Image (spheres, rainbow, N blue to C red):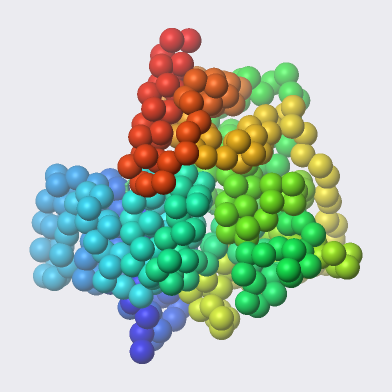
Length: 390
Ligand code: NAD
Ligand code: MG
C-alpha cells in the first residue's frame, strides 16, 4: 500500500528535495497535501505535477490565486489558507514532512505529533521552541519522530536499534555534532561587521533556504541543533559537543564508553536523510552519488571558536537555563536574522539582539502551546524594539 504524505513547506529547499526523492519512488508514496506560504506559482506547478487532495497557502488572497491557476488545469485539489488548515492537513496522511521554516511550523508539526503520525522533522525551530511539550506529544500519542536534519539523522543512524533516549543505558559517552563553520570560518574577524546578506547566504557546502544559511554563518544553526539533539536523544547538555569539520562529509558521530566512535558519512545532500526518513527502516535510492573518499582525500577537525561564534555559546546557555529560554532565543534569532536580511542591522548585531532579548524577557516554565507562543511574541516585540532603538 502506498504511504500517504503531507509536505509542510513543499516549495522550500527541503520540500523540493523531498519531492525529488518521492518522484523516484512513485509506486510507494501518494502525496495528499502540499503547502506553501506565498509562492503560489511554485505550488501551482507542484500541484499540477503531483495532484494532491489538498493545497494550503498563507492567505485567502493567495488561495484565490491558486484556485484560479488550478481550475485552468481542471484539478480537483482543495485549496485552503492559514494555520488552522495546516493543522488539518496533517490529519489526512500517514507521514508528515515538517519542512516549514521557523516558529510558523510549530502548530502543524505539533498537531502531526498529537495525531500520532510518522513525523519527519526538518523544522528544528519547532522542537527548540517547545522541547518537552513536543516530546511528550510524540510519546503520549505513539507518533514516530525521525530526524531529517543531517546531523541528527546521522546520529540516529549511529545509535543502537531500539534506543530509548537513555544514553547511559546504551553506553553512549557523547554526541559529536559536526559543523562546517559556514562561510566565515576563516574570515578576518575585523571584517565580519561588513559582511552582506549575499556573502552570508553563500554556504560553502550546502544549498539551503535563506534563514538557515544565515544561521549557519553565525553558527546559531549549530546552537539550535545542540538543543534539538538534547530533546531528540535525551542527552545531557554536557554530553553534546560541537566539532568543526569543514568538508561536511561526516554528518555527525556518536562516541561510546568503550572508546568507539561511530560516524555516518556521505555527500552533503539533504536527499540522503530525507530518503532515510521516508523509507525507514528500509533504504531506498536517494538520487545522491556515492561519496568518493579518495577525492575528498583529507578530513579536518577543530574546536569551535566561541569568540567568533557567540551564538553557539548563547544556545548552550539557553539549554542550560531551560524552560522557555530556548523559545525566547529562537524568536529573537528569527527577528534578528530577518532584520539582517532586510539590511536593517549588521551581521555582528545578530548575537547582540539575541542576548539583549534573553536578558529582558523573563524565563518561565510553560506547559502548553499558548504559553510558548506568548513567550515567542514577547521575545519578538523585545527584539523589534532593540532593532528600532539602535
Ligand atoms: P526554505 O526557506 O527554503 O523553505 C521554507 C518553506 O516554509 C517554504 O515552503 C515556505 O513557503 C514555507 N513557509 C515559510 N514561512 C511560512 C509561514 N509563515 N507559514 C507557512 N509556511 C511557511 O527553508 P528550508 O531551507 O527548506 O528549511 C526548512 C526547515 O528545514 C527549516 O527549519 C530548516 O532549519 C530545516 N533544515 C533545512 C535544511 C536545508 O538543507 N535546507 C537542512 C536541515 C534542516
Ligand atoms: Mg543540520
